[in-house]
Amino acid sequence: MKSALFSSYTVKGVTLKNRIVMSPMCMYSSHNEDGQVEDWHMTHYVSRAVGQVGLIMVEATAVQPQGRISAQDLGIWSDEHVAGFKELNRQLKAHGSATAIQLAHAGRKATVEGDIYAPSALAFNDKMKTPVAMTQEDIKETVEAFVAGAIRAKEAGFDIIELHGAHGYLINEFLSPLTNKREDAYGGSTENRYRFLREIIEAVKAVWSGPLFVRVSANDYHPEGLNAEDYVTYAAWMKEQGVDLVDVSSGAVVPAPIDVYPGYQVGFAETIKSGAGIDTGAVGLITSGLQAEEILRNGRADLIFVARELLRDPYWPRTAAKELGVEIEAPKQYERGW
Ligand SMILES: Cc1cc2nc3c(=O)[nH]c(=O)nc-3n(C[C@H](O)[C@H](O)[C@H](O)COP(=O)(O)O)c2cc1C
Image: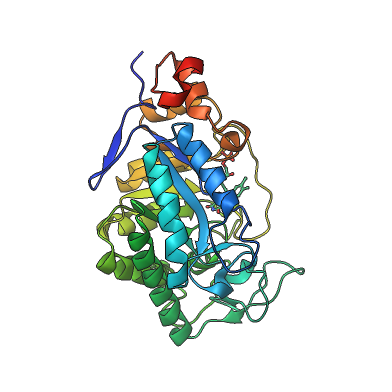
């Protein structure tokens, strides 16, 4: 059978050998709390490249120290971070994977010492700190931090940059009316709530001409929150700005229950793809080759992001290929056992 999952995908001159993306997953393993790549990160990411994943996306990586989810997050706020990522890129590419990094700021969900920042001074829940509402100067500095992160990502050799606009972190907090109660140009209307992300995309694109993805939470699971239709509007603006793909996740903006089932977010990726005419990535309980093939063949998404299944099975591309009756290349050293 001809397989969509194992067909290549090219974006702005970067070719992925298949449509499988290792979804960003925080490892909280920068044990010295300095944001540096450590041995664990090398082992963790490189083993999935050996497993023939087309695109390895490095976890949420903080553009500012105050934007870390935890003190052990990876960081890219300093030039000193470049060498570790450069070595990681060298090793991943040696195994034929393309590479991406997810640039992130945790906003009100940061658990680091000192003040934390968000569009409005509203805590996520009663266990978390109340953030400081950002001034326009803070906003400007944060946009510049994303730009500096993008410059360092380029220097480190990443093929693709993803902006983390999902899961209730800073960018998402500006987008959602549940977390953005600002009365200035960054709050209120849909257009104003998009302004922070608009400025980040615009500024990043001035220093980065490679592929740019944005991860979104396409449903707030709250009656006054946003849903996939609202994200069609945002995605259309992203497309106008030259974003290449929207990686469609959901939730975590406010504490709210999520009804989780196989492919539970795929419908959102499909709505955004057809509504905004932009490529999408599907993610969320996609665990089998057949499921991935269905999503791609029916034109519901363009890339398949896999997270937890790749923790259980670092060679999941091989598993999926077997299920689909497709032969994929083995690392030369493993041919006798593949
Ligand atoms: C250990 C772990 C860490 C995660 N860290 C991130 C992250 O850094 N950035 C992000 O956008 N999503 C993160 N996620 C969410 C995953 O990328 C993915 O969207 C989610 O797990 C659903 O996909 P799955 O059902 O294939 O696991 C994380 C998930 C897990 C399990």
